[in-house]
Amino acid sequence: MKADFVNPFLESVVNVLSTMASMTVTAGTPSLKTDDVAKGDVTGLIGMTGQQTKGSFAITFTERAIFNIASKMLGDHPTEVDESVTDLVGEITNMATGGAKALFEQKGYDFDMAIPTVVAGKNHCIVHKSSGPKLILPFSTDAGEFFVEICFEP
Image (cartoon, rainbow, N blue to C red; front, side, top):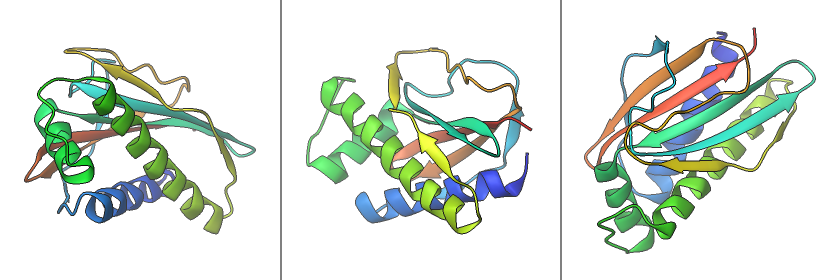
């Protein structure tokens, strides 16, 4: 997968969480993902289509991470994954994808974005609609772990 399709998402995710939640975000080592099982508990997934290619972006948070992020961004202190938590994950997904879309446009790519879908629960599946390889990138924060998945057709 070309770095052109990875770096805008990474830059945007770091920007959203550092700005909106005042968090320091540290990226781990990326790898190819071979299954559909989420590494976290709540996932925002959004599709993107354009003239050059199509793909999708997913961001999955552990409960610990999203509860801490909710506390920082909303002032809430959730103890379960409820509607406010899933709404927040959808909004973070939207903001991160919107930021990445702006960065893609600077590189000459134009994408239309779908409405994000949020899935929650232990061992839920993330099904990307494109046939490309799935890249997973772990991130750590003082609030907990989250994972970014990027899947674009070659």
